Length: 298
Length: 305
Image 1 (cartoon, rainbow over the protein chains, first blue to last red):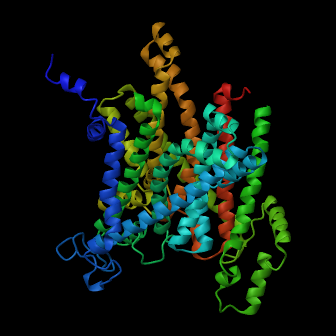
Image 2: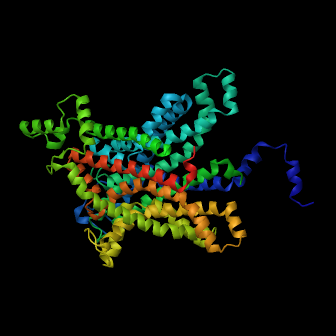
Image 3: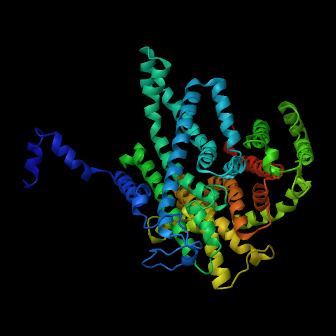
């Protein structure tokens, strides 16, 4: 008998602690990818964003025209922009704006979308029709167009950006959740709960909602990526954050004016946007693999 | 025929919804839109004239009915800065946007189909990895970053291509690549997935078992079927291209609908903004309709109930 075999047979009495300690080694590949990407985004994006006031070497709004377009060096680690602002500090504060817009937009969109999708799918009939037609109408505005239209009339500002992005963002959640509700609604355990006398609210919140949330989590990850990209687009066009705010999109717009003299001013914020959007997209892919039981077993 | 009719009828409520949202945009302006457009120091006579031109003094229901009636006739109002009909301004700009979008789409398809095909044929090997890398990066690259970088590299440093003018083919290259890259990334991924799925089908095995040449199996049996979902995605991507065109046009000063819309926004020319939004949304609805119809035509299974 091999030396490793006997301990396995004798192990059962000590269930709790070893089982927990051993778990990380038995994570499936998708689960490990989710953890790795989550950790990467946490350390590389969320943490710097949250700690920006302590990490930033300079005031992101401090301008010094005498020190404009300084090359990377000891005074400015990544150089300074056309107004003499410290690029590293502005990038760190820009991460805050991206994180804020991403999380706020997805929170508003998910809350609204899940509620509408759950109610529509559960109730059926004319209310479902009305909700889904509203979704169709909003989806008739391609991509950023509705957001551009809304910030154009509401004016710039972070709050308005979140409103404008959520105006379309909730439709994705609503469609997804409604579709899931339609399949879960007819499952045996829901019918069983119903026949035992569970009320509508209990059926929706206790039996249906928990079983439709997994795809919504995936959608949320892609949603954060989309919201960050959209905010940057709006700010690039001068429609997002108020002038002077260190948003990555606004930094790119400012960088364009000095593209020839100082291309690095444009390179950093673009790389930042790309890395974060890539991170959340990959996290969404990994979550899909992890949460889809068919792929998990494979 | 019923499929066509149903799909057309389906579009009507959506059109009405789009018209309604665009109508209410003006009423979402915080405060008085006339103040915002003219500034608070405007003369009372000018304000009254603007108010009348926008029809703001009438009850909301009457405004709405009047707006629907004139829009259906093709009257999109008058731009108050350029003092010309919005419809005419838009009509002048459409060719430039269509040209840009078609070029972007052509580049995307020309890049994505071979890439997806190669990736599927070399499934799991380095070529596949390379194509996947391009797909993932391409989707995450903001076009407002790619555009300036392309200008820097190919127009300023290398001086190979012109920018900031609409002209011959050379002028089209950089804006089209900027706009088309994300679509190319997505399409290459779609093509790869669709091909891999089709290549596992029984009819492919049958075709091979019959002794057909591999090239015939690939291009006639596999690619044709794999293209069905790809065509749908191309149709859906027109929406992304339309909104991407707004940004791309602003980077390259391209005289299309996007720069017209942005000019309207910066100048608070709300009738112009409404007109542009409406035309872009209607274009998208129409393209979606055509895509659905094309889908039914390519894949007869869709038409059957």
